[in-house]
Image (cartoon, rainbow, N blue to C red):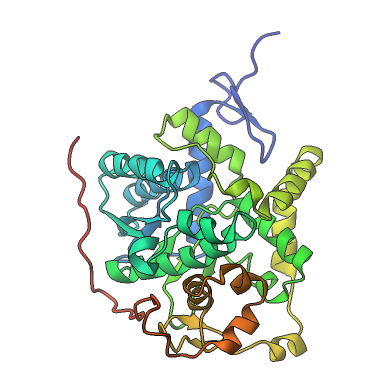
Length: 355
């Protein structure tokens, strides 16, 4: 049987079957449609305006590496007028993050983008290795997720950027919808499918890959021969998200459109007015100044638990720990620096230099 021609250009041989649509297309057409779909997502959602300073959350993994490459490509091609930076968070995971950051440093040179690295140790006085040593592997992802989110905002504030973009893809968002349903987390369910989020005291954050399938991102990285780090976090196999991921993969195998269908279902959810009225109003943490719905933000509560040797309690019964806490910590405890956002104030970054 002769090879099938590309379903789009009808001249080149089809070598890729798109997981998202089932189309059989050539490599060049795949690059074009993938980049065009991301561009359309950016334009339709009005994510940027000319002159924006944008930090790309860079971990060295496939998603953030492809995001950095595509953002630079589209910025040049369509003249978005953006000033792009790479922003990496070093969680302090020996044998994983130290290796992946070497990939980010190579990407910095390859893409010609300035890089800033902010570590948990620098910000919180703890590495994830030290956290796991105290709390074990069951709840460590809770600490990492909370610490990472605040670290990204603080790193972006130090860069003086207007916007953070992350490599969260369609699979990630569908998994989050499933997780929030399984946990009955109404507050997060109402906002987890938003492509762009921002509150008064945080930096605008968006997901240009919201509708991009993980498999297609992997294919793009492979055929473009991009330099990325492919090892999974050594603490991730025990994460709750893994159960949602396994369930989603089984759904995708039976019905490839399940990923987008779940996202659209999440977008259609509306939180009832009486539920909204029962939600806590956003304020700022009285200890570190970061956005919070309580007197102490989640990061300060978790950090205090670690400092008091009660890290597991901070996850299992945070309300009890919060009730025992005061806004003025013990002088011997490490605390998070006060959060101050100064738009346009840029910190020193590592500029790319030829290898």
